[in-house]
Amino acid sequence: MAVWFVFVVPLVVMLFALFMERVETRLRDAAVREDEVTQLLEDMRPDEARALYGHGIGRALDLFRLRRRGGRAARTRQRVRM
Image (cartoon, rainbow, N blue to C red; front, side, top):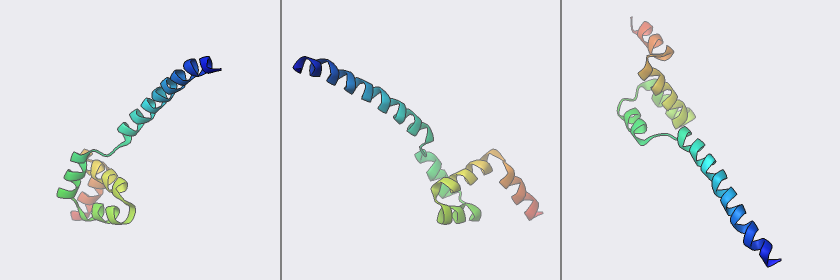
């Protein structure tokens, strides 16, 4: 019986470590970077501030990234100013 523990426990630990590595990789890709948050807080516009207050950092960063790329929100804002 003790022989099974000698073989099974290291195998289970190794499989768990491989599984956790995959989870960590996915979380690292989805995580918010510190420099993006700093840039958002420095260059925040009113719609991004409302999104931050109402929906959280995720939605505010989505609007910020869209504006930086020149997406739909940036074009709409330019039309309103004209």
